Image (cartoon, rainbow, N blue to C red; front, side):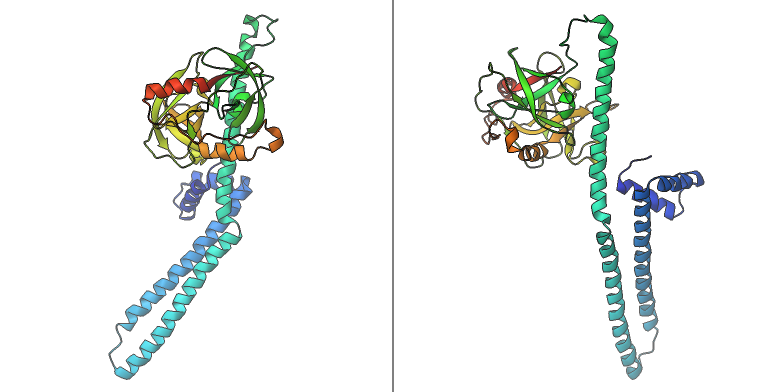
Length: 363
């Protein structure tokens, strides 16, 4: 267990500090801390936090004990007056001490980067997870290619090794797909629903978010009408009906489902978990809501769980577009802000969409 989220480690640490772990698990915890200095430091900070919190609880217990003893004092006016006076002073002191203790605890955690480190660890873990998944997919595809070498002609120098989906960002040739789809490509071709094929090039890629922005650089390509969909920037709701169109084979395939989680694998905040059956060829395909708004880009599925897939949020796509250097663009990327799908039936939406969704062929 070399990588885990911080909240999982804190839960494990609490069990260890309370003595609830069996001997073998306690030994495993200590070994984990020895091998991971960052988590060992987190354990030390967490232990300090608990100790200071315990001191605060002791002060509160002392306050309660004083209150109970004061109730036993006989109601003699002069003595009572002194007790009340002393008690009020003591109460103020205790309250001040408790407040100072709490402020000290949280200030120490803030200054030492306790809270920011939690967020950074989650982000680092998510990035590492996507990179590992990308490597695994590439290795699997390379293994398949090696197995098929003997069955193909040695003169075929342009054999496809990966196929997926992409869709238009703008009418003049900008397309988005997954980074893992085009990573390492010698050449890229986009095929539309009419069978027409165009050459494309990578304009910008974001490995952390698994996004790649392509541009159709082909004299045969003619600018289309404005894309009929818009890109939703706000968060979508759990249980919301969604659908996708992609190319797990050489013809468009429709998939329907719902949004099942506002985070992706292992709590990844840049993605949604969606309940739509997907295959490798669906990678890079659009995810839309009932109104025809793009809410995400399919990036993969979780092995062992049928129908559980992940989609990069549109918000992350827009942030990636805003970071593209101006000298990399063939004109500005201006996203459509008028939705022409909202009043159409689902079948009519799909008919309109197919012209803007492409098979991505990587060589």
